[in-house]
Amino acid sequence: MFNASLLRFPLWSVTPLLVIYVGLAFSAFNLDQVQQNAILTIGVFLTATWLWICTKLEETYIALLAVFALILTGNLTEEHLYQAWGQDLIWLLIAAFIIAAGVVKTGLASYCATQLLKYAHNTRMLCYLLTIFIVLSAFIIPSTSGRAAIILPIFLGLVEILKHHTQILKALALLCPSIILLSAIGSYLGAGAHLITNQILVEQEYPAFSLLSWLWLGFPFALVSSLACTELILSLFTSKEDRSKPLNLSHLSVVDGHEESAGQKLSALQKRIICILAMILGLWLTEPLHHISATMVAIFGALLMVTPSVGCIKFSQAVKTVPWALLIFMAATLAMGAALIESGATQLLTHSIFSRFDTQHPSASITFICLMIIISLFAHVLIQSRSARSVVLIPLAISLAPQFQVSPVAIAFISTAAAGFCHSLTSSAKPIAIFHQTETQSMFNADDLLKLSFYLAPLMFVLLVIFSLLIWPLLGMPLLL
Image (cartoon, rainbow, N blue to C red; front, side, top):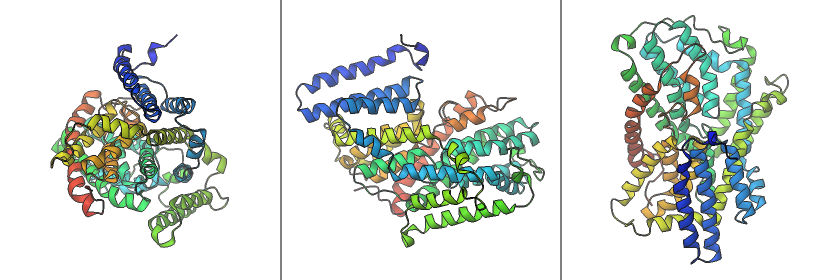
């Protein structure tokens, strides 16, 4: 018997899906076998999307269920699923999480944060220094939830010092997850969705992003949007007196279980880890010179992290920190993406939807870009997983783009950047849920989050339009074909 508690919405929410099924079934009668397979693939894809939106089932379970259905119906081979585990991006993420485990083990991130925040002489400076630290953390810690776990102890240390200043604490509680989410676009490893976007482009034989090209395009937007969000939060949730309030954070302590983070000087171990990180980042940034892939550099760095007398963590401990569910989800969704492309489902779907539109109209390109930005900004209300949003939106976006004379590579990057906005609900993103409430008190409520979203959404839209039309083309990513 079906458990109704698994539903996020009433059972009647399945009605639109059933209507679409009927429409697909009738349209399949007049089509050949290839097109019928494409329609069947669309049906499986829509079912997975509905399950992601309307149920509380694990996103990884849904993805695997969809892949299993595609294999049973003959629209996907088993080899596609097995080959997905051999993708370089999977190994890149595994190595990155092992490197991050070493950084966490030494308490290096907490140490750097406490040293930086000591220069915050007032609330405004505190917020901006914290923003800079969070933006830079995207290059060391993969995934937004991983960065939230690192920054939470720092925030709790600030809570202890500022416990009598509720408005400042509310601003900081909103600031931390907001910047974590917005700054992720600055790093190729900032979110799993970035790797999925890149792989979908590769599957459709478009140019892929490298770590360096993603940094070149993403970091300016990450920095500008993060700084703009910081100023917005300060304006909305603190008074002029709060913003100029003198602070003394020289005694800021971070309780994260690592003795190294409490010291006033870098330990020998922390210095070694800094050298390893510098080497990894240096090799990543100079890839065009030595042609060693980013994945191989990451694997080498991971090996150094677990090497006795050189690194700081045992291999068995580091492997336990790898989010295997996320990797399985990525492998499954990559297989789903391959099925959508190879079956012709994306082409059939986009042609049927836009066959009657005048895609050659002078304003069609701009309208399409703005529409994709708006959809990507608000898709989090329905699809909570950032990676799942990429699986749903990116194949459709890059299939539609040529019809509107828009670069598929550009629209994929724009949509992925817009997905960084997911602030409407506490359940919309894990970092927001983490900072929503401490063990002793609620830091902000739903109304505060909606207030922030009300102003941040149009701000993000304007920034995305400016970057899409002006900045990114100047940086080497043309918008139009």
